[in-house]
Length: 116
Length: 111
Image 1 (cartoon, rainbow over the protein chains, first blue to last red):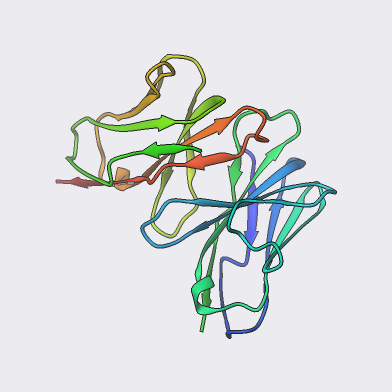
Image 2 (image 1 turned 60 degrees about the vertical axis):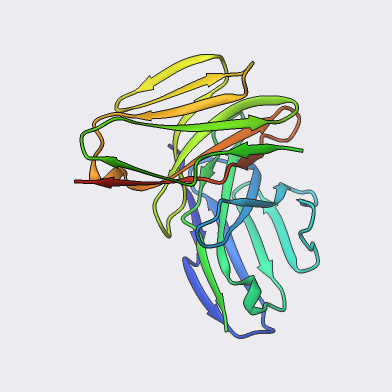
């Protein structure tokens, strides 16, 4: 299957700082990327859908000013957690779907964010 | 809205067969995915069902009934490495193919 690389795999930051997470499709062009958040022992919750060159679509209850998403190219989307707080600590996972791929979305390795 | 339900936990014996059920209620249903997720890792794709019936792929099979809003994942010849969380996810037409995940089923395989 296709490869999606997510970086960093883990990060620890101080409360009030911002953290950027990158999601790259390595061997295909991703027209759509999805960002998920997963708390311990819970399922994945979709945060937002980003399409290359346009604004992201956020799910209900997700603050777009806090979770900034940029999908500037067909192989890269970034999620920036601004003014992070301890309650933002979670596992963040991206997935990407390419052009012509109407079914499967491929997942990145995930990023474990800990805000102290 | 959408509602996707799975059992929270299941335990099975190595070498046995286990069936993990998923029921869903959603408008504009398009297809259903099963993913496997080990702790601290990203989900990995297992299967995708669009039409009614059984799809077999090695030790794993997945079944879908669109009229009943029901799917199951069947794991045969269980191995210890199959201990993981199994996630059922549905896609809706016109939704950009975004996935909505169920609660996940934590499977523990014992000797």
